[in-house]
Amino acid sequence: MNILNRVLVIAFVVTMMTGAAVALLVMLDTIEPAVWLHEPWHLFLEPFSQLDSTMWGVTIGICIGVFSLGLLLLALEVRSPWAPPKGFLLSRSPLGRVTVARRGVEDLVAREAQRVEGVLDAQVRVTQRRVGYQIIGRLAVSPETNLTELTKDVQARMKDVVEHHLGVQVRDVCVQTQLTPLTRKGQRPARVQ
Image 1 (cartoon, rainbow, N blue to C red):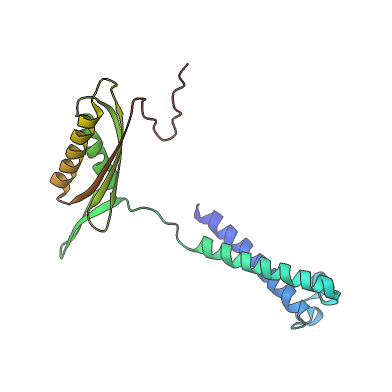
Image 2: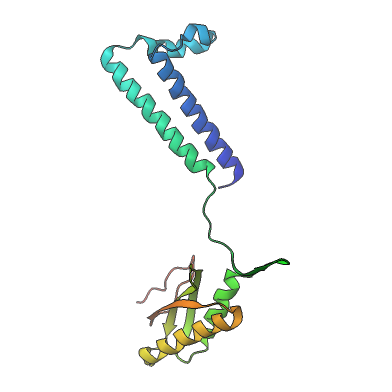
């Protein structure tokens, strides 16, 4: 969400919380509307000070609910959104940090998987774990291939290429195969008729 939208949402939430808090204070006889507010505004709050007992309890509950909802929305809006890191930290030294782009590593691994005979297309996701890296691959394979041999070969090559080029340990390589072509983000799967 861009910064203008965030500011507008925060302003709306703060206004909502302020209204609920002021109405709550008027109902609890903590503030007198005519004393605290000027002419047109105290007329909106006067009815809150003249509620009967059944409406008073319901209105108190609604004000507390609105204020709590405002706090929740404010906390969600103010916190920074979580985004996965764009790269992997390979090393840190007095001279600085050495990182590699996530997309580059994933492209390298996908290209290595596609070099295996029988693999038509590959999509790869590489994630960094506490101990080592995890590779998750989706492969479109030829129907004539032996899947057991193919997946063992692909797993070994994916692991080797990451360990060779990055110098890091690969903990896990998961491979999912399918006979139909892979779909890309934003692309609809082909319809078979």
